[in-house]
Image (tube, rainbow, N blue to C red; front, side, top):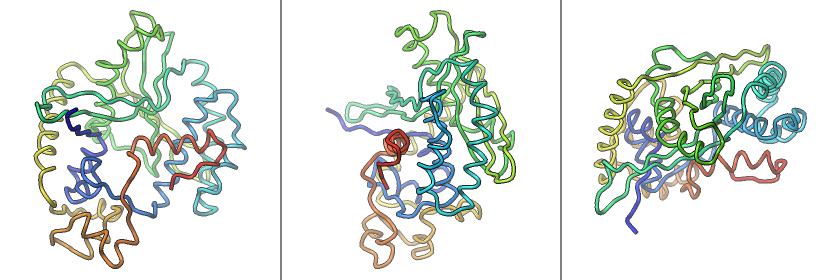
Length: 313
């Protein structure tokens, strides 16, 4: 069996933002993960998994039970107040309507699609990922992918249009999922793909606020996106052969980067995973990731399914 390289859109974004960050966290190298998760990231992840649980259990989902299960995993009372406001508003104003108009087809739909144009006799290359929610709207005979997002402010329109994640997910729905859903009689044979709906919920403790943006792409736009993505993946394949990568600095992304202490220590000097793991202080801040990002995502969902008994941290 040939060796495999798997790229996700998150890894592509990491590569484009900072090659050092990507090289230290890539699933195709020896990936490191920070032992401490930022408050914002943890809150967003918990809300995300709460929605997965709610759409899976539908009318049986119990808001009070979800909040009780999530509470020990939050870092402070403020985060709990925000999560409570977000989930309470969602359960009251959004979830009932969604369950009435949509048939839930998939929750955390994982794909692992071979990229024939990049694979060689020595290597198989895949694009991988997980779509939060896939639904069928009978009224329009349409399949939609739903991506949950949390933030203090809604996405700027230019970023929404250029974001590679919904574009790739729409591509996977069109080229991969539609045929499979029809073959399994999940949808009618003449069903079509609508696109991706960005489901944004603000992180607020004072009120509930959400917004949905429909992302649809014509064939010409899809063609150029695929060509651009392929070119980036070729660069990533070539860079995998390097022992270390140089950092890229940006005032916003550096502030939130898990590896900012690495850059404070080494600045522009070469640094590898092995260097970090044997460093006097940095070795206490990171560990080698033993579960793939996507599987780790699914394990978080299982914490709610098991009533909070699992702990994958």
